[in-house]
Amino acid sequence: MSSNPITIRKFSGETDTFDPEKLLKSLTEAGATTSQADKITQTIRSGLYNGISTKQIYQKAHRLLKNRAKEKASRYGLKKALLQLGPTGYPFELFIGELMKKEGYQVQVGQTMQGKCVTHEVDVLAVNDHAVRMMECKFHNRLGYKTDVKVPMYIKSRFEDLSAVWSSNKEFNARKHEGWVVTNARFTSDAADFGRCTGLHMMSWDHPTNSLKSLVTKYMLYPVTTIPGLSKNIKEQLFRQEIVLASSLATQPDILQHIGLEPSKIRHLVEEAKNICEL
Image 1 (cartoon, rainbow, N blue to C red):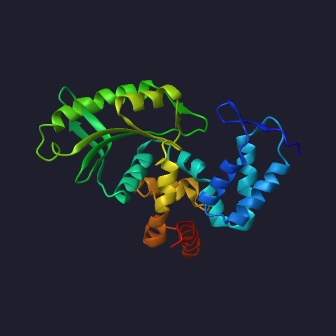
Image 2 (image 1 turned 90 degrees about the vertical axis):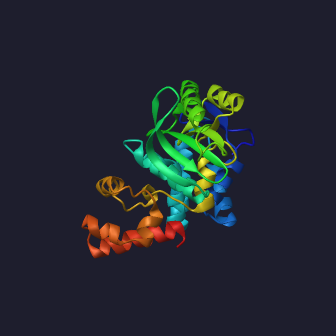
Image 3 (image 1 turned 180 degrees about the vertical axis):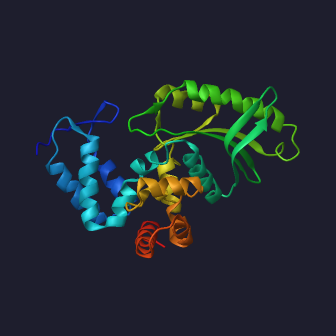
């Protein structure tokens, strides 16, 4: 392979230069050993060519990792798994709520709250001793999508309407008020700039340092959609029961019994969930 930089094509259609360190990091974050990540990266580098898509690189890395450790390959597919928390945005809101619980917050999902001017449905309300977070979740079911600046601008105005009421609320007035936009995709540069300028907190797949990807990895809180043996029908039934975590199946196999699965299938899915969550 030539030592010249390799140009790769992103899901969005944009081009970039292949960075082996990014690939190594994504593999180790999924649980691959340093040796496994090195070998996979070397194999992929040997087959690169200008114009190769990030999808092709991901598929090859996923296949190579799956050959070495199936449960780690499932974690490597986290980005795709988050896209499957649909078709509505509600399962994604539940998932963000679970992450906030791990962060030490008391959480309510889908609450209607009175602002100074109008009422608002808040996707995730997260409260601890120090802060109140109004978190709006923007779910996308296809790769390459970016949330543009109109979204944080709209959410900022909603947050200010609610914060005006919280300032006179005995429960919330002593706490810091925070407005958040959370997406499983990415933000445009204008959207990110607007968040920084106005103090609106922005969390996407890989932004900021404490990103969605890093929080999932930190707490080993993987969605049920990372479990490869789950059919679309089973996922939909789980979502209707507000089950969005792989760890829920690992620790509560009776959930699958209520769906009516055969004991052998339940044992298989529970084992996969345990492996992914390292339980």
